[in-house]
Length: 243
Image (cartoon, rainbow, N blue to C red; front, side, top):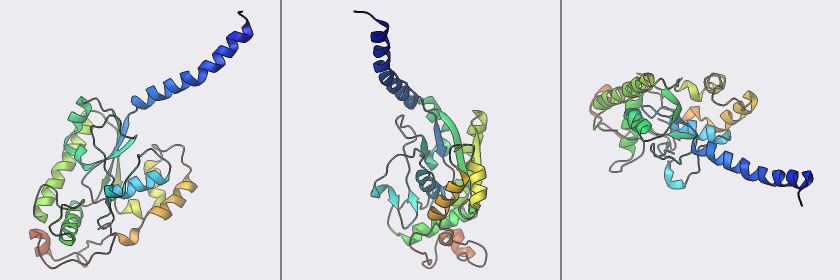
């Protein structure tokens, strides 16, 4: 028998199902926030920080993180089912292909480090793990001098493609991003509007390890000859160092 009461009851029962369908639709159409760039600039640390803040970075296994190099936690850039936040240096020369594959890019966070320091960091990781295809090691080259050129090309390609497609980006200075909580919060706050600054600061203190960042200043870097040819004595690297 029809009644207003029965109609209201049916509508109440249908609401959860409708809400679920709407949620699934939003999830499948969600735009990605990518973290990309040259690498060796605190990108993995940034993923750890955002994860602790409760953002959608996915789940990880032990094999996906390399503690000795503080590297890893990367996702496939073409994965349509990836989490909201995806870290991968391979976006650098693949922006056009990713967009063509149907992956929507909402924003790109690009940690910036002096290219010479980023290259030296990759050299140190490579020297500390001889004979291994280690995360964070040399990238498309076998020398430090060549690594600077590769990183410059990657970064230029990334920024050019983002500008051409009018995709917003946030440039973050490293190592300041691991030493200055207020600075990092200001840079990220538009992307994390629901995260209170006090909570951000507490998580920052827990996750950031600035004492593990290698100093590549003239007084502390390995010799210029070793940096040029990627050879030399075994460097002193702390376990779990950012480099």
